[in-house]
Structure formats: structure tokens, C-alpha cells
Figure (spheres, rainbow, N blue to C red):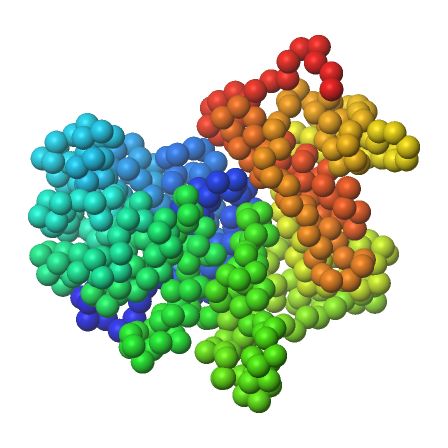
Length: 520
């Protein structure tokens, strides 16, 4: 079946593998926004998470399964019985559901990680797929580290999974080790060895920068499902980039003769949504969705594009939703225009959230004349989605005094017990404010990264700050927006602290507490 279809199924794992990117962390509300957008984008399968990994992951998968009917909703599980049953429970509300179970098949993984013999691995595959097939109709099996597995054993593993009821067989290049020619031949050998009546999938990592090329080589060999992520997010160097895979197939249909179900005009907004909510910026030179993807600086290029865009553009900006159009709203704009713009930006808010967002929009209009699309998106991401759960700390007040000598910052935070305040000096207003927060709370999180950007090129743009904090073994991102860059930076730090606590609770670990009697 797989190698005769003329359509490629897109399996998006942004919410599972993509979230494993260093510094990445999304709450339930943020994951739901992305999942809804992926459904409207036309993604065939959304891997919503790893339900057995934590109660938070279970809740996310359960919510997405219930609220995103457009796509098959998949949950990842190991071959352990408890994992599989928890996965099935999380997926109960889905209109269409899939259990995606996996086990490693390479000699190095079987010996050092699993400590299992090849026969024991085959027995585990047979048990896991059979159990999953009893619980759901749609089962996918992945052979982790397939590209470093011995081909005869890998074929036997896939035959075992197929015989037990798996309809989709996934060939992962887990460590990004393969090269396109090699991987294409490898996939072809597997399909010939197991049989063409199954859907063959590939999951390629980008350690050598070859994830998209390897995925396309597998398609040429007969694979008909590609596992990928928005913006190429994922472990280490990331996964195959969804937008690059899809537009390569569309732009070079003369080469591949294959299509996808995706509405490519939504790619740009989906990329922007994932970037904003994850806090991981898209490089300007990123293919398809980067800020420079359709920019031309060289004079000869500009002349050619003005004469005919096809001289230097192999696809239209509008094909990926990057038309460059922007609707600027102001204080006289009404609810209807605001609601329409939210939907066009890819957000799906409840009526209650919509009213809160409209009120915040009107308040923002008092501090700046025109509010851009980027301002609205940042406002929703920061003020609506970040506050969808209960925060341990909320910023109540921050004041900074600069002049001769050290800068002084006074910060007041609100928690469940009341207000807590502290002050500190520092090398500039942001450093002073961060020192004051550390003094006020019971943690001294380490700042790993700090980034601030404007939501537009106007002087009254919102400042959008992203940070990554670490405390002990836990790392978490933080995000904040404000017309005042100092306030946005403080909001980002406080948000990061809140996420540290959420992640530590989910993982069952302790954060590194502040040393007693320590003063900065």
C-alpha cells in the first residue's frame, strides 16, 4: 500500500519530540492552540505527547484528543504494558486515535540501554503491538535507532510488528547518522523485505543537517509518511522541518509526483505561533518561513524580481502565507474586527478568553496608537495563555531607579500567601530587577539565555522577552511582553520561575533552594 499511494501523510510531532528541544516547555493551553492550528493546517497525524511520561503529558494528550477532530491523534508509548494502557486511556476522547509504540533495535541500544537479547526484543514487540491493537484500531510501530540496526534483524522486527497488527511501520534515523543515498537504499531494502502492503514512515533527525534530504530520499524509496516538526524543533539539532518537506514536495512535484493534504497558506502563521509559544526563535535565513526567505538585497536580484518574481523566487510568498500584509487595529476597532483578526492569526480562544483579550487590546491601545498583528499575537500568548493555569508568582509591581552609581530595583510579587517585596542593586535595570526577584523567592535560578525583540519596527512596539532558566536539574523557558522592555524582561523571568516549579513537580524532583542567609 505505502509505496503505491500518490499522497504523503504528514505526521507532526512538534508537541512531543519538538517540545524536547532544549529550553522548550509548553503548558496545556499553549499545546491546545498549536494542536488546533495543526488540525486546520491539514496535518494527518498529530503526536500529542507521551501520556505515561507525566500527569501533565497525560492531560495534554487527553485535551487534544477531545478537542482536535480534524487529525488522527497519536500518543507515544514504550512497549511496557502500563505505558500502552495509559496511552489508550488518554486517547479515549479522540475521533481517530493511534498508539505509537517503540523499542530500540540497534546492537548498541539493545546491549547497553535495554540489556535485552534480540529474541527478547522480538518478544516485546509482539506483546506490545498485540496489546495496543486490542485497545485501538490504529497502531504504529517504531524501531528506535533503525539506521544503526542490522538490516536482517530490523526486517524481522518489522515483520513481527506487522503480524501483531501494526499498520504503520516507522524507520527512524534517531541520531541523524544516515546520508540520503544510504537511507534511501536502506528504506527500499526494508520495504522489499517486509512487503509493500503497509504504510512505511520515516522519522529523521538533523544532526548532520540532512533530516529533510533523508526524508525525501525515503519517499523516493517508497515511504508514504514523514514524521516532522514545525520549524524543525526537536532533540539536539532537531527533526525534519515540516514546512521544508511539504514545500519541497509541492515545488518539485515534477520530481516526486506526490502531494500532501496540507493548506500551505497556513505554514507561515503556524511557524510564528510555534516560535512565539515555545520561545525558540526562527533564524532569519530559515527556509520557507524565515524573515529573509523572500527578501532580496542584492541589486541584481531586486531588479530581476521587480521584472518577474520567478527570476529569483521558486515559490510565491502567498503560497506559504507570507504575503507580508498586516492589518493594523486601533482604539476605534470593534470586537468583530478583533475576533476575526485573532482567528486569522491562528488562535482559537473561548468566548471568555476572547473578552479578556479584547479588554487587554483596548488597554494596549491607550499606550500606543496602532496595534499590529505581532502585538496582538504577543498579547494573547503572554496575557491569556501564560495565565491559563495557576501561577506560583505574579508580578504586581516593579520600579527601577537609575543615575549615578548602581541601579536600584524594587520588585513586588503576589503569591497565594500575599505580597512579597525585595530590592537589589545591579549592573543596569534588568540585572537589578532579576537580583531583587532572586532575593524575594526561595530559588536562585541561573539565567542561561536572554533575548529581547520588538514586535514591529515602530518605536512604540511591544518588547517581547524570552529567557531560559535553570535550577538544579530542571531547565525552563520564560516569556513576557510589555511596551516597557524592563517590565517585559521581569515578566519573562517570573514566568520562567513558575515553569521551573511546574516542571519540577511533573518530574518529581526538587529545585535547588536558595542558601540560607544569602544576600546578593
